Image (cartoon, rainbow, N blue to C red):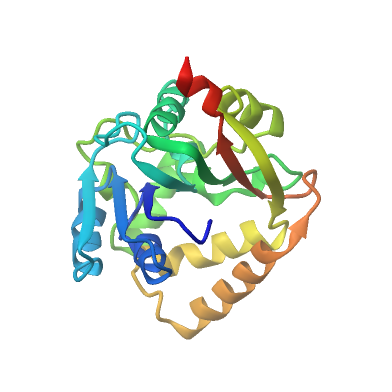
Length: 242
């Protein structure tokens, strides 16, 4: 993120921790949007004390933000949760609200060799088994935040680079790309899931698994092996003049 960033939008802001961190780095104006109403309420609590905050409960294919008003847009682990027919609208909206020469930060699951191990799709491949395991473990998971919203949980898609280029490059230039995670990442996701489901993320075992997970995600992997991918993009200003 450029050091002179004055405003940032977090698409899929969850409970607002990325916005809080951005504000600590000097970003004065922060925007957040999330489809989960419970997450937005928690974000309001987490961002108390920040003078310039705008939070919206909505799907991200329509952004209630003025044209060219945001310096940086953060969109990490979000695009794969949006139905494929709505993804182009999201990218067009991000382009619309972003200031000239603005930066877009994206992370998404990558279609590396271990993508088939993704536990996020377990609920869709084996719905009855997932429901039975969930009842045994107890508590509620991600589906609670989608109840009654514009769309429900969709297939956790792992993108090829070609798919990302087709989606993003009409409006943006890709300036940086890096593969993240490999085999340990899906394994850690499987091991973390029961703790996350039961809201026991303070458990020492969960923390150790999460540390291992974060370590592998910090490594730079060949895109053929990568389980996830990070992209940094710049807005194509010539389009905004047309």
